[in-house]
Length: 97
Image (tube, rainbow, N blue to C red; front, side, top):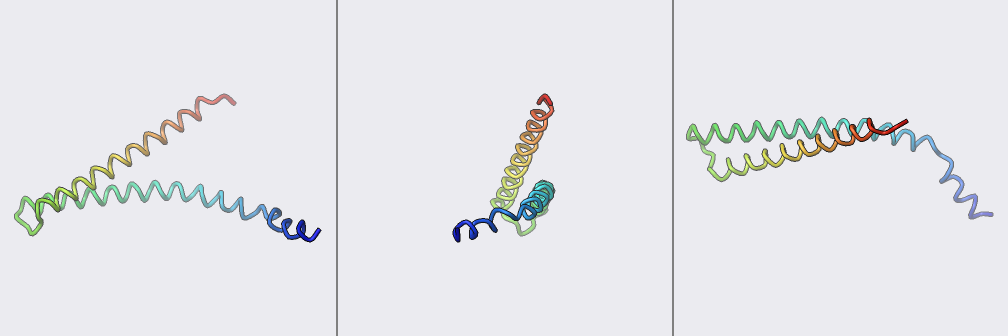
C-alpha cells in the first residue's frame, strides 16, 4: 500500500502537462521566428563580407566564402523547414473530419 501512495502523487497533477503544451505551442512559433532572423543576419553578414572584399577591406577571400556558404546553408535549411510545414498543413487539410 505504501508503494501505491508513493506513485499516486506522480500521476495526479495534470495542470503542469497542460501548461507545457501551451508553452510548446508558443515555442514552435518562436523557433521559426528565430530561425528566419538568424538566416537574415547570416545573409546580411555575407553581403557585408562581399562588399568589404570588393572595396579592398581587410577581409580575406576565404572568410567571405565561408560567410557566403553559411548563409547559403542557412537559407536552404529554412526553405526545407518551410516546405515541410506546408506539406504538414496540406496533409492536415486533406484529412476528413
